[in-house]
Amino acid sequence: MAKTTFREFTRNLDVTDLRWAPKDGLTPARLRIELLSGLTVALALVPEAVAFAFVAGVHPLVGLYAAFLVGLITALIGGRPGMISGATGALAVVMVALVAEHGVEYLFATVVLMGLLQVFAGVMQWGKFIRLVPHPVMLGFVNGLAIVIFLAQLGQFKVPGTMENTGHGMGGGEWLSGQPLVLMLALVAVTMAIIWVMPRITKVIPAPLAGIGIVAAIVIAFGLDVPRVGDLASIQGGLPSLHIPMVPLNRETFEIILPYAVILAAIGLIESLLTLNLVGDMTNERGGASQECIAQGVANTVTGFFGGMGGCAMIGQSMINVKSGGRTRVAGIAAAVFLLLFILVGSSVIELIPLAALVGVMFMVVIGTFAWNSLTILRKVPLTDAFVILLVTVVTVLEDLAVAVVVGVIVSALAYAWNNARRIHSKTRESHTEKGAKVYEIQGPLFFGSSDGFTELFDVAGDPDTVIVDFADSRVVDQSALQAIEAIAEKYESAGKTLMLRHLSRDCHRLLNKAGQLMVDSDDDPDYALAVDYSVKTGMLGGH
Image (cartoon, helix red, strand yellow):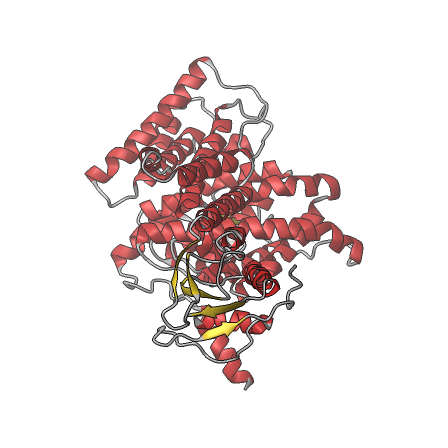
């Protein structure tokens, strides 16, 4: 029995193929593309990880170790080959308060608990609820993230050492001006031009990697005085080592870290699952939501025990990978390994790369990520959907992704409920089977939003002694619907009249029978070939 249950569970978990290249295999040509794509991603990860570490108030290596470990583990066992994960700003802005008040050790403990919560969410298959996110929310998410990525790059236009990092890279500090600013902008423009032109010349080398390499060569060859990766911080370090968070194991510690862990787990999963859907749409391949939850959880749990700040999927780096040709797990694995090599032996070289080249790459990511078609469809879609797109975009920029998605889903759900509530109406006619009876043919769903409108459909005083409510074109959905049925039945009962229900679907029948309102316990015909009338037992839900 236990084996059968476990087998059924694993079948429902819908585990994605964990082979490194499940679709086409690793041919030499494919391997070259994947490795070069991974190298490009690794180069773009360095300044992001360092900047987000600053945002969280921790050492740059804490962000780099998180980028390596989270990126490696999710690449190996994640639900979407091609996705890139690492330290992100969405999580960093939540961590800063915890680090400032309790210290970095509490952050490591929080990351461990965050990971365990994400694993639990994956095991419970909660990842499938991402399907409830409407398309307008997805458009708002994409646009908001594109703007956030753009704003995060603006911090690189400040004099190194003067910037006070914030979530969007817009903190205090002295802006570049004069010749340094012109030179920085020129190099950014050159990088973007190379990325735009390169695919038209050759696809042997990923365009972003070519842009970084050529601009870095120009800067180094001519000795141009521009901000470089090394101006942010030194990325030199050793291998991440096992580190048990040095916090007291008591209830007080749990009460401190639990709220942060829940928030971080939720933000991480929402951003990861939305990125999973986005990458899946671009590559026309399906990913496993529950498996991605488990992968993110395992990655964060391990990261917390190795001195990392945790992380989640990164939409910017994922876009770089996909557009550079990365389609398998190899690219993500390569990106993590290259990043570790940068830390161990390549820091002196990587620190020479001009920030302008990396900013140019990210600006091209912004252009490619922003859903430009959403600007034209705003006038064509329903007003509510247009409002949701704009709302999620703005909230993503001003607050964070999790808040934006929750707000967008709530507004969309309320709009859907309101639209359905307005659909409830009825047609009346004389009964063909019960002489003298009046039939109300209900049309539209009966639920909490339409329950008041349902009760207003009936003329209790003017109706005959027998009234039939026909639900052939309606559905009884929730407790509010049951309450409405009981309320109208009590009115007819008080008036000495009989109310019967007809054409209940099987789910409606089960709902009413469970509530104890049906006087006759018999199965209805699901195809409505036979009309079965039910009396209503009042007083079951305390209606008045």
